[in-house]
Length: 338
Ligand SMILES: *Cc1c(COP(=O)(O)O)cnc(C)c1O
Image 1 (cartoon, rainbow, N blue to C red):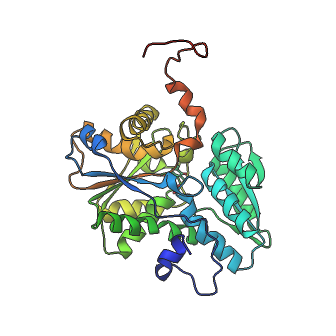
Image 2: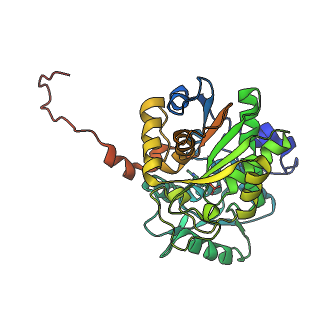
Image 3: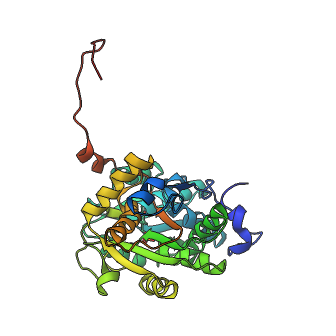
């Protein structure tokens, strides 16, 4: 059997009686990115991309979801629910469909990328559109989670963090050593928490560099953001659930949590697609945007850096229109010069 529970079960809270609900998640590519390295003024072989968009539903959320759903089934749940900026709902819907569970998702109105919404629809999730932002949707999901038989699968669910830590195990295997620096987008801060846990459990300690969008950067300002704004919808979060553990990851590792503007995010997003052949979603590009921002200030850290690209570019087709080239229109069969 494949999937990350099968691969890492000794390091996860499962027993022989845990039913394993898997779609073959994990084992994602670690891609060498010499053009990013060059743009950051770093030597070849010093920057790698962990391409989490290669997971079954197109984001790293699958790592936590395989475990959260498996444990929910083990505990006898009949349904799961979550609030989501999109990817958690896409992943929960898929794994719940596979497990035969109901799935209820609370989504902030008008702020979920089209690809993610289509996944929740097709996997049969029951969709609740909240006229508000993610933080408000999460309050509602937390309340609804008191319903008998339902398990909450947001990243406050500790099994999500446990599943997600396996990405750190993979990076150590793929690199054959610990990276010196780890760059990652930060929204609710579950993922930076999970990577740091995974590294620590392996005796590794890269410096953790977390990146928030400038309009949604509570961990940078030190206070919640009431109306978070950014086109990077997956990190459009004003009150991160894993606030304390994100700060702990930063401080214990000697790293930092910084912010990047939407313009910097889009610039990295485009650069990755055009110069490395890797199409991630805008939120994901915050990690590379952060590295390039430090480089511009002459502060790119030395050694080997891994940048996590959290989700697949196909998730958010709406954003690509602004990059469309001038399109030439020709008659079928007509001649044209290149
Ligand atoms: C969920 C998500 C994030 C943010 O991860 P957190 O664990 O909430 O910090 C970043 N990028 C993408 C694509 C996501 O789906």
